[in-house]
Image (cartoon, rainbow, N blue to C red; front, side, top):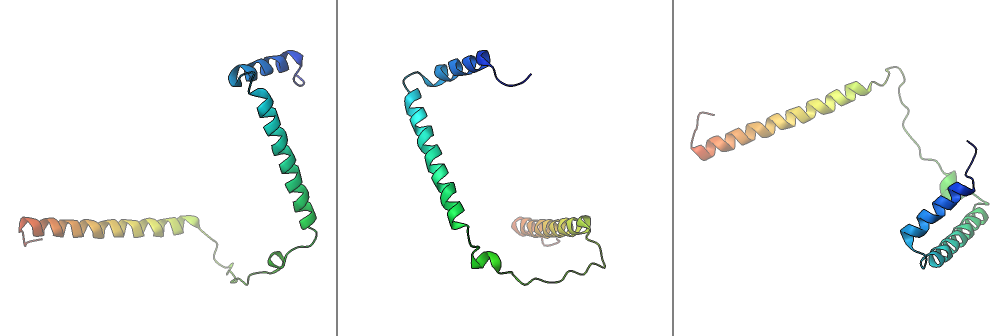
Length: 109
């Protein structure tokens, strides 16, 4: 159960060749090599540039102090948001009923 042996690698190679075609394999390998070189050079540049932290990474943003006396309850926040959506939907429904009554000429609503 170790790794991949020669039979498995041979089957994988045959499948890849069947999918992409024999003629495209050198181009794909060349493109993969170029991509690996570009990636390696970019990683090396990032390592060279990362010697000194930037001013932005050293500065901090002042924040508010959170009162820890009341525990955070996400269900309260979700309930308030749901109540607000229900109230908004009820208001839109009332407006729609009023508009429909106005179009019908019904003045009792």
